[in-house]
Length: 434
Image 1: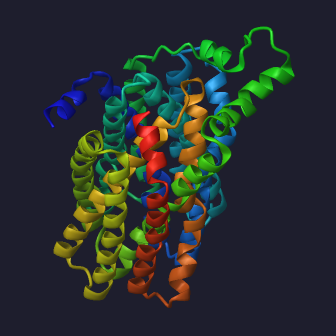
Image 2: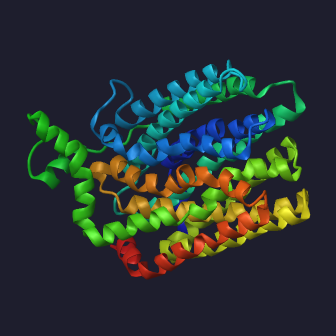
Image 3: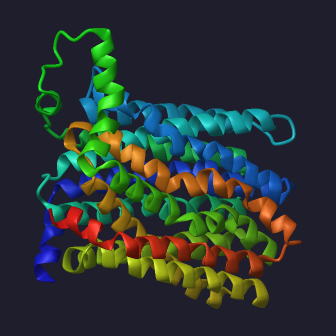
């Protein structure tokens, strides 16, 4: 255990933590804050659920991820240059969002939200590549620790900073559009952290030459396009075999579908049950933030000590249990004590499962294409919450607002992924200890 704790002393983890914040923070802009804004302005559950389609950018970012591995910005290096550029775009878009109203500019709110999602998803490609490039390929413990630090950072951006808008909405005269100015300012501060971080040193061209057996210099356009777009995906399937590679991708897709359905409707549920914006900020954001940080770090230690497979299995079982607690709240009404218990359990499952999944996906990547291959698998991991879960509002409406039944169904959605996880357990262990 002491050895596992010592892993966290690496100074590089501070940059990984701040990049995690920058990765989680945009989900507030187009998730919680936007949902609360739309709900307060009278939009229906189905309409709010459909706004989740803008998150599809996170499901398709692997389509342009090869460019993030291949094209080098003229400043700050391969990874930090892309990260800073996307952060600047998000700042500008938040300022634009502050000028809109749902009565007159609903289309433009959706359009700007989509562009924020695209910029954020592109930033995530570079951030994930940065984390993988920073940790030595043979340092399995370091990869688990980096995954837990990144998860703690993500939840600091999503939960810790995400509480501020809800406090402001209740305690001040700030409108939801004006809150986007604050979100822009916070992202501006995160840009400074990007400038102060160190660029990982990876000779990606040498790694690519080793895989292809030829130098990339002097390539024709056709060869350049092939090595940029096709080779990263072909290498992943060739290295693992088509059947096993497809099994990995299917499990990654299935694992968090239940949680995705729950997450898309959570803010709407809290408001309909009767929780105030302050309750949401205190429990769903701040308490969840601290719980997630603690369990992220503990999850990293457990993965180091007991392995990724066990971490995923424990997290999956707990994930189903936490969804059932939301069903209890739907029956009892707005009890803050029960909400606190639910948030603690939900924070544990979210943190533990994310740390294990991030570490697992990171180990599957070849460093020659770290951003591209991670984006391919991570996009499947969020596909449930971005594509399938966009219909969650229709599900609740079809059940006549029966939230208890909805949450029970989200718990049942976890079961198929656990069965599939058990069936590929030996393959996961081989990847982990190879």
